[in-house]
Image (cartoon, rainbow, N blue to C red; front, top):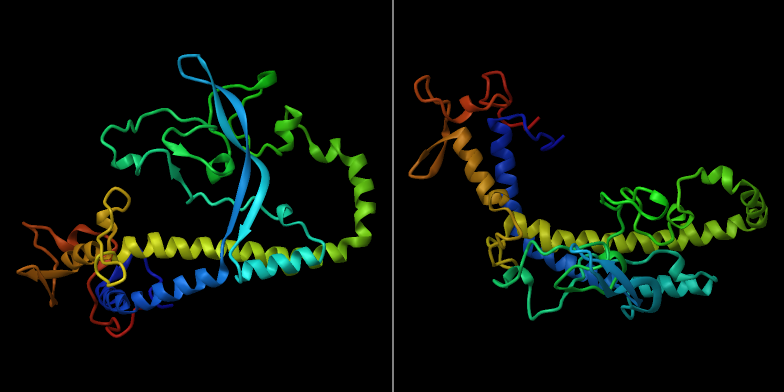
Length: 314
């Protein structure tokens, strides 16, 4: 399999992989244009959620009333003419309720209360405490700040129940019940009746679920993956070396040592002797007993043996 290696490979494998990834930069601009066109075709879903006042306890013990976003959806907007809009229209025409599918959270949508990013404000306190309901410096427009996850805490809730690991969903049955129970046993009587009430419509339910609901979710997932590829993966790998990503990656967000050019330079130094900073592909860097360097420092990187195929990456 082509380029299936990670931590263990030989010089010829590195040489061909190196050539491949460096040449792939030629098509990054076209790749970004395809991604942008695909994002326009897919469209996006914007949900406007309701708000309510809630009381939180500060570190000093004082109470503060804050505005919290709820799961109640008041309005939804979908890109006109997009694939998502067409699927929603088909779903509604078949009797489906779009709010039953998902909360359509977008954790990448964050609004700051100030004029810019707090990380760029010298007066901002990066150690300012946050909690599950409020993140200082941001104006949330989605429940749970766009991320549904297990709570991390050292405190106990009502009835002495430990809150760590509880899902932030307000609809979580264990949160509503207030204790851990076996739902299958507790709800067995109702479950039997619901099964008989639903089983004669299972085919209709599955048609909506499999034909439309899953397609909507897949498009939402694809949109998120394409955005991550365009705004994060490609920027981290080749930012500053291609026309459509002409700026070098922001070191506050991206690791400089994981940029493709840094990785190539580092591994070239391991495999090859360099002359004035340029690798000599005919001189393998084996080091010496007195001065170990290059391949001698790595147990899982090798030079080529005389019996190795120097035209294969296998």
